[in-house]
Image (cartoon, rainbow, N blue to C red; front, side):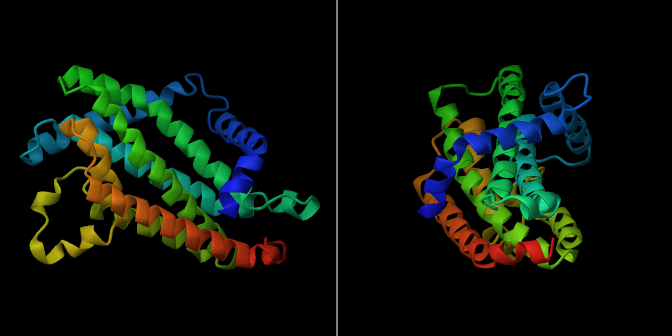
Length: 257
């Protein structure tokens, strides 16, 4: 695929853009990247305390279950939102020099993936603290994360293209993310969803990535083959659509940014 080849060709430039995004995020922060470790722990602790009293979900290790949901959704939320604004925010640079435009949304998605990696110590800490199963199989969670990275890249390319032409997309997407957070089983088990509403999960791509991520972490088993095939298909199709859409309209970006 030409997109993958060019991403590899310009990997050093992408790395510089990633480092720029990370430095910008933690600029003037005393704790720096340590916040990536503390933030999910604090949110998980507060949310777990609230829902443990309000609801009695039949989940063996609820804190770990909750943290997995937060990690996956935060990665999707951050990567796609930042990618959506990447072309608009770099409009001045794009008007002055020639540079491959899709490097900007790609670097935003990759920098969000780096932030996700910073949160993994928090995940391992909770696994050890709660006595969860920990083995080599646990590390197979990298597989669904990899394909979710591809999925987020495809979504980022789509959103960054639409945002250039339709600025209302930025506000509408914020509303969509709020709805998506409730339509994804982050803090509740999918078993409580009534049969007549199960279609909501089936059309939600995050549900499949999250389930594939939880299997090795929460259940200590390899992600199911059928589940991974679904994740792979979703990621490849989304990336292809995003790349084709971005490539078709990128030459007119300078007229609208």
